[in-house]
Length: 406
Ligand code: AMP
Ligand code: MG
Image 1: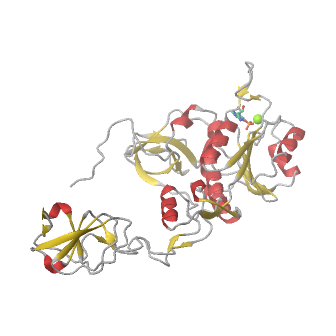
Image 2: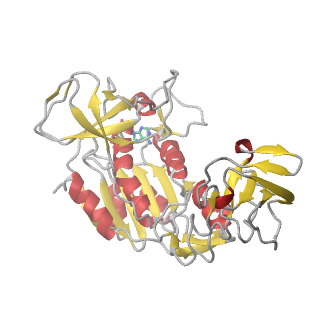
Image 3: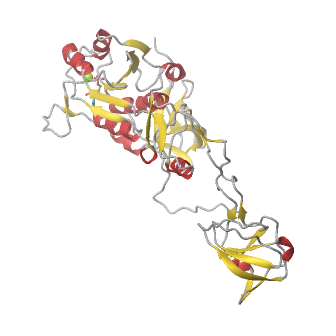
């Protein structure tokens, strides 16, 4: 019995285990998921310091002329005390001296020799960055399950942390199945076909942070399939494509079952890609995708991405959508949960035409996909749609007005 898309995603969320952890240098940790919380060991900023190049002053000295004979630079450790009638020149990031109540930026004073004319109003604490206003000592600044990016690395480095505990990298093994397939770097006969799925899954899995291995395409026999499976059983995830339908040489499921696969999902109520199968052999998760390129790609995006997030320990492991609108009228056959790939320009979603399960070319143009329920046959221009993004660097071939204004 096919499970629904939601049931399949629920099974993934509840059954896919998170891998164990390791400790690595922070510089290597981008894209990985932290597996424990990090508590600030000290305040950031560590001490009250100047937010501007300016003068450290007393508030009651506003609108007077004060004397300045000293300078504090970033990196100094001043031990003077500021008293009324005086100012100290101070650079951005330099520690605030004792007695200082505000900093006045250089551009707001008049300087003549050592005499500084202060503005008529000075606010208490103006232009002082307070200790702990960024990260407070003792608070959690990084939670287990958060994915690390360059800006997370900034927080870790600002706390003097050199190594971080993360979920280990997922090992993915990929192979195609089909007597008709040739690797893209070999000579091909007129009746043969290049294997485009395996390089696609190899690179997409790398994109998503996995350590990927690509084994020889399996012939359509049980022996060949079982031998390919045996050579990949040390992986955390095995991804195959092809041989999952009802053809005479579709032996993928049988071969995996012979080697002990326990099924989690046996076909999904989705078009395209219904024969998708998910199971486990020991600690290895197996995904058998259909051979048709576009069908396998949309199922990869929907289900394997969710599996990878779950295995990687990501707290945010559910798909999230962007609500946008349809660019043009669009119709589907209806009666099935249907995936539609499309382009997204920030304003609207434009379904790609044509897009059929066996095609390759629509995939490279797709920014995202929408999932249409079986009751829908016609969607008119302007209808609100929920898009699951595939690409996520948002840029344009046209120069856009990037400002927000009133
Ligand atoms: P199958 O699911 O094995 O019946 O394959 C369905 C269709 O997808 C057939 O037209 C296959 O030739 C094609 N196909 C299967 N595997 C691949 C692959 N790795 N790359 C490109 N096309 C494939
Ligand atoms: Mg086949």
